[in-house]
Image (cartoon, one colour):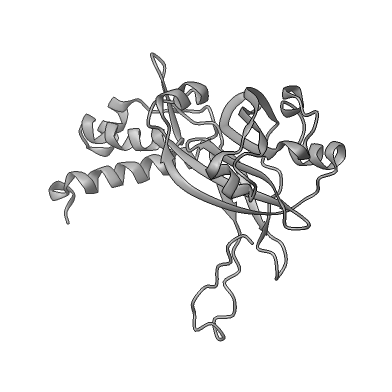
Length: 257
């Protein structure tokens, strides 16, 4: 297809790929040429350019600043899923950056039917419910909702949840040693309330993460679901694809145990 007959979708893809290359060649905070300059360079209309820019803004590669222009966005916070052993799917190293928390809600409530099923306890059993805003280097990154059987964390206070590693706290203070977790992740968008907390536009892309953590006896000790900013957070993993001769060329991808 010639350039002069290319449709809007093709032009938008070409512009988007050009902008991606531009971002990769620069460092966070570097300016992006103006819309007028880019339109002239690429030979496209302002709406076509803006459509491609909007896509890269929503995925966190470009930021717009009113009255100043466009810039390469800050680097994303990377969480690596690292292969552990033949028998255990992945380990979870610490994510990049300095993490801290601000407790939004802290209460002792009955588990209820849904959380009770997750934690394998009676709906009437008390759990500590904690909602907290997770920050990286002072910037909002995620909203986390935790449910922990109250009997396991006697004396837990809101201040305990604002600094340090929660699993280290469970081990060192409450004698609970986490061992494994089953975790799922799926894309979503943020609500109006979530957008205010995360300082992003309403309906911005996000990653919904749900995790059930067990101790060495297989007892559930934590059920948590979290919402991570899609523009600033990413998960990276290295996958072993097996022996092509033995597996007929089909990759064998292990989920977390």
